[in-house]
Image 1 (tube, rainbow, N blue to C red):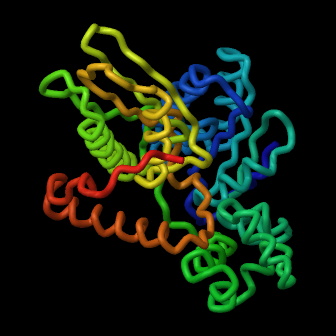
Image 2 (image 1 turned 180 degrees about the vertical axis):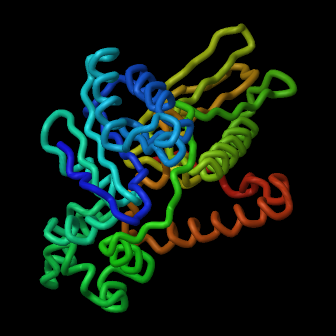
Length: 339
């Protein structure tokens, strides 16, 4: 599939969005990323099964157009991995990602030139625009905004009243083909871990819980700084006799917030059933990481939680300005067993 057309006097579309098949094994996904790196050095992994590629320099290097590079990628993934991919190409991330989602075959290439963007986006249903959540699409449809073209024609102020200030502004801009975000090289690690080693063998439950809370704060901060969220948390306990206990629990939703990580970490600690075990160390690990931008923001009616999230943002800013030790974990708070 190729809708690139001739370009006259405009910069070429150079953003490639690649969608792999769902439930692709992680090792195969990593090999797809390696093939992408063979086309361009600017590859942004979007786990678990997508990626962005900036082709601006690659077009000059390979001496061809973006649509042809998309076909080259398909040939390589099929021949090397037995996997076909859907490739969208456009002048922005939004256009490229929207294009890749419009390919209905197991694989294909759809390239949209800059001068084609407005006409191509206009007839698409509003929910087809990359970045529009199902909830936002439903709100827009309730007010008669059924297509991307209608969304682009509505004033930003009106859409902001419907979706909220930031979401409304971004929705209108992207419906008009405006998206200044660059492709940022990123090879996301599969996990992030923090560790605590006790100075001596400990049996004290309060000391253990305080150490665990410190790990929760450190892990959450690490994930937020990386722009990642964890789908699962693994707790590893190391004992004085050299043995260890390890268990993984998935989060209800991917998160990097201390509230969510702490709840799961405490439940894991409770599941360990410690009584008189002498601990030498604890490892807390965030598993199955994804880009935080992929996590849908949920509306919460829990005022206490919202207050804690605001406080978390404030503490992150303090740590960024004065150092990681400027705000310690809330070890002085009462430690309660997770329900």
